[in-house]
Image (tube, rainbow, N blue to C red; front, side, top):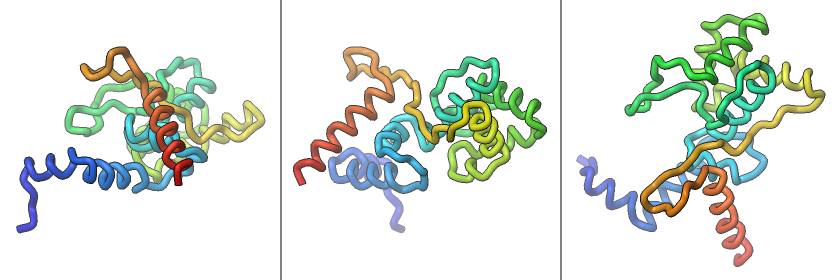
Length: 180
């Protein structure tokens, strides 16, 4: 029937060839306007569009009174990956921003649900937030920022971060490219 067992899937994913095949597909298989590959490496570690969304959180912090952790998640998710009912600080900041920029809480919440896709960049929230920041600062807002996510694992001797991961992978990437 063409379906793979859990053991077969695990075998394919946890081999060097599988890691390269599926890792490359995850790294490159989505549209994002990043000007540096480091953001794709960060997204690989922190989730799709985490670097773009960390920049959104940075803009929100700048335009509201909220101090946000720039982790790349505007919403909270349950263990199945579904949006949780828990209202995050980022969502509270977004709702505050919307209330002062003439669009509804409903629209802001609808827009936030698109945070894991390129469609987020077509939303009222994206456009209003970037326009307000550009007006305040007099320059084009950043598209991406390395997310602030702490990494913990029994395999790590000390606490690391998504920034550390992305910089490390980029160094290896550039070293490999230099050998071509």
